[in-house]
Amino acid sequence: MFRRLRIKLALQFTALVFFLLLVLGVVFIAIEFTDVNRQLDNRLQRQAAVIRRELRLPISVGQARWLHREAFDVKLAAKDGRVLYASDIFARLPVGLDAPPMRTVRADGSSYRVLTTDFPGHGEVVLQVAGQDRIGPAELPGEIAVFFIAAVPVTILTALLGLWFARRSLAPAERMFERLTQFTHDASHELRTPLAVINSELDLALRTGEHEKHIAAAKDELKVGAKLVDDLLGLADLDAATLDGHPVDLSRLVGREVERLAPLAERNEVLLLTDIEPAVVVRADEGLAAQLVASLIGNAVKFTPPGGQVSVTLSKGALRVSDTGPGIAPEDLSHVFERFYQADGSRSQEGHGLGLAIARNIAEVHGWRLTAESQPGHGSTFTVTLRR
Image (tube, rainbow, N blue to C red; front, top):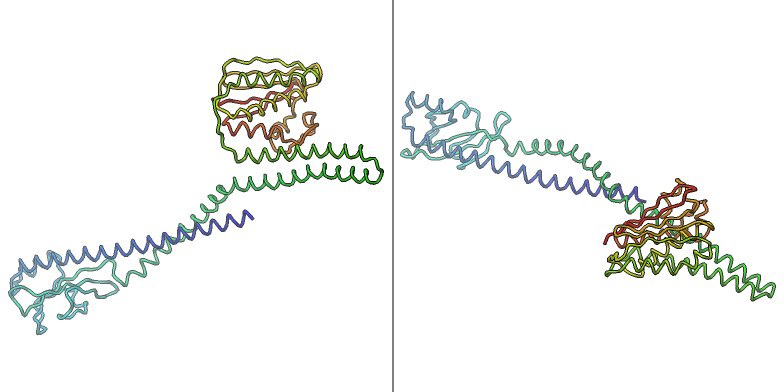
């Protein structure tokens, strides 16, 4: 799907650029054609003015040499057809004495502009001045052909650049689509299990009559499914969330969450240590911040074996939660924040693999950065780099 979309976008981009090139080319050629003709016409008018001012009839040998020396292409003729003087070029130009004041003619494969005017003081004498037109109407097809030939490599380069830009621009959408597809697959898989168990327990209750036992088991699975749905909805809300925070005393919040989770640590025979710098204030959503802190501490306590310890350290720059658990394998460490990712190690024995994904989303909503460091057998450290 995305491959076809990339090609379609590249072709549209190429067509747009080619159309713009075509328009610019036509405009450029039209401006050049008009400007060259205007400049040539002005030059012919200036030459005619000089000739009318300097030349005297009848033309002497000296004046003929002056015309030749000044490289004027001139023709002087009486209206009855007698030629008084003519440059060699007029032998090839089919221009009559009754021609319009400015005319374009073709000769020897070239275009010429010819100015025709009366010679002052001699009403029966016509003056014609000619000049070669670099771009005449006949040359326009050649100019356009050159433009199209030059446009071909530009178009090919544009197509290649269009594909590159389309691939780069669509990459985030492709990754998001892949994540959505994987997310949908994983969510369906995770929900299928509790629904299957509920169906099985209810069938057993109907078949055996032991309603209380099997309905209780079904309710337990419903709680699992409900927790999963809540987590999924929480993730969806975080994906679209914008922070509307206020100053929060993070030192007090972390201390409160440590006290709340202390019974869990005690039951698991885990020593919970704290080093909390006072008066660390951040701009945050207090409920989400508490959820993030509780998730990291609860996760550390849950996966630390009896006799181990969990350390919670808060400074003005970061919150760190370290444990002495089994650690995370290197091949799993880069995936721990992915949704539904569950490695084979002991840190993935329970849950649906959404806790750390939610924690990272909460951190990102606040503009914080959540990272993980671990060595198998030496515990793990999760660090939230704060932006106050």
